[in-house]
Amino acid sequence: MTGRIAGTGSYIPSQVLSNEDLSKIVDTSDQWIRERTGVLRRHIVKQDTTVSMAVKSAEAAILDAHINPEELDMIIVSTISSNLLMPCTACEVQKKIGAVNAACFDLNAACSGFLVAYSTVLGYIEMGIVKKALIIGSECMSKLLDWSDRSTCILFGDGAGAVVIEAADGEKGAVVLHSDGEKGNALCLETHGKITMNGQEVFRFAVSNVPKVIEELLHKMGKQREEIDAYILHQANQRILDAIAKRLGVDKKYFPSNIREYANTSSASIPILLDELKKNGDIDKGQQLILAGFGGGLTWGAAYIRI
Ligand code: UT7
Image (cartoon, rainbow, N blue to C red; front, side, top):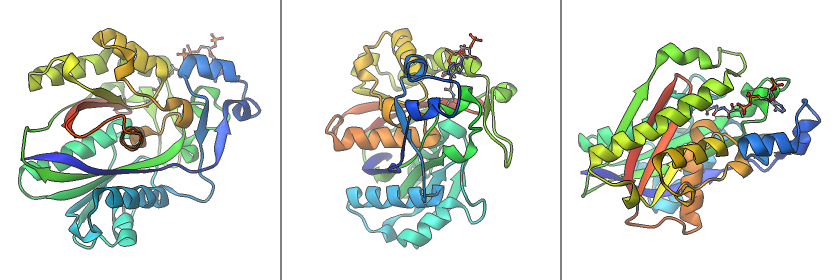
């Protein structure tokens, strides 16, 4: 027994903040941001909240999976930016979509959160406790930024992505997760505070650890790098994606990216990208994917999934 992706959905707020717009707020330029990050613009909430974006992405994923909300046994929301601490965002989603039979909770593993949510659901499915689950990454990063700090405010954007996972026969999924609390200071967010980051340290951490965790996962699965149809990574910086591809010796074309449009949406970035690729026909049934995330904690990990 394993978990299969039955449907995906995403929601991006319509308000756009371009690099040009940012250059009027802080001492930066379109050229600097493009060259150092690959970001051209990001989308920022006006009326939406972490809850409302989670609900919209969830509705889209449920529609895509052709299921009724009552069929869901579990809803997990990964977020560091919930507008509500209690009730949790997952319970609010349950209420709004009518998923009356779902057990609901939120989890926080920063930008690795979607992977942790996926691995949690996979565990419940393999134990036979859950048959259909909804996992959501929803982030309102714009509320967590110090808009006078050019080293962080240019990097992030808002959005949500959701995936319905169903129990299915077949090859088991696999996940590898790691954390290093000793390095937590590299990326911090105090309660009611704003994000602070040592960008260079996080950059080095991602480029050195993500290839290793992908190798670890491939080894665990007995798979070769070339067998993987797409490496769907947390969208933090185009240079990080390119460096990871290079270290793995895999062509960049197998590392899809949408960072130019949305910037870093933390735990929403993987499900948003997954949804876009699926809707555009860039990934299809039967293909083998590796998802990999990294971020605050520090946390990082990778998951193998056949769609
Ligand atoms: O989800 C995980 C979250 N975080 C990340 O993934 C972040 C990982 N790190 C990064 O993406 C990169 O480190 C950054 C994009 C944050 C920074 O790029 P960098 O190439 O590491 O630049 P840097 O920090 O070494 O700064 C180079 C220069 C500095 O000026 P000096 O000291 O050389 O005069 C900075 O003050 O660029 C300056 N700088 C900027 N200049 C224009 C920093 N931010 C900006 C800016 N515009 N926005």
